[in-house]
Image (cartoon, rainbow, N blue to C red; front, side, top):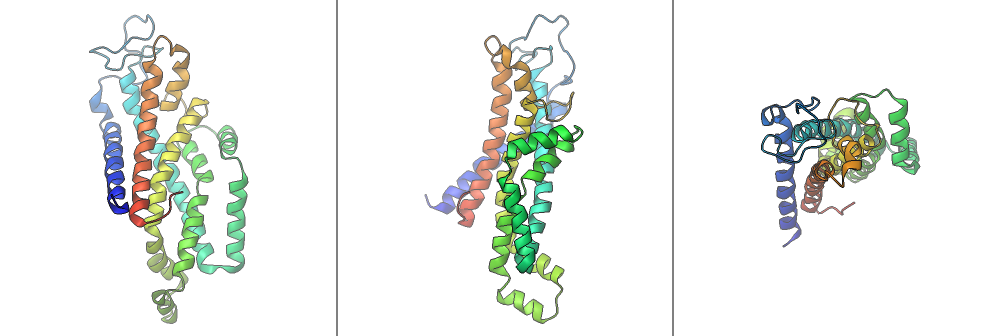
Length: 274
């Protein structure tokens, strides 16, 4: 199978997996009658195994695990999308400006990129998540602030190869403004690579959100979170393994799905994998 066929296969597989997770998130209120944060057993005697009433059992507080999984999908996708918007906004803007104007502005922008890249990502995330007040908007902001450098470097490279093309030179000769040239002629040329990196970035954001939630620094309670589900129940793994396995599978499925989409797009574009 050629790169094109392989890329399409990866893209279809990833899109199918991600679409299933998105449907779970969108239809969460209709897929379970239970509130994810409310105890659903009349008398708590410990985590209950899967049953007809509770397909994935109940957790250490008597809450329905299936309800927490489907509502947790909303949390993970919301964090990933918002984080990616922050990363895209910063990274694409920096890359366009650096690549188009060049000279000292390019040097300054790339110096900032290199500075951010030298910082340990996880440590920076923990520091920012600890300093900033916890909320559903704080975590995407924190992840986005440390994840924009790849977009900046990629867009800059694309713009450097595009800015001397004939159609760009013609637009300059006709008196087009810098903003018009950047938005109309340069941004579309960089967009395919940006979309592929955005899919890969979504998988990274979901993983980072799960890691922060596992450490107790993710979205605040009582919002359901896959990472926190693992953290809260890991001590029960020997007697109730589904409490750890199910959210772990959910995280893995989301990460793999977006990775497949990203690598599929890179293969279709003929770009090297990062």
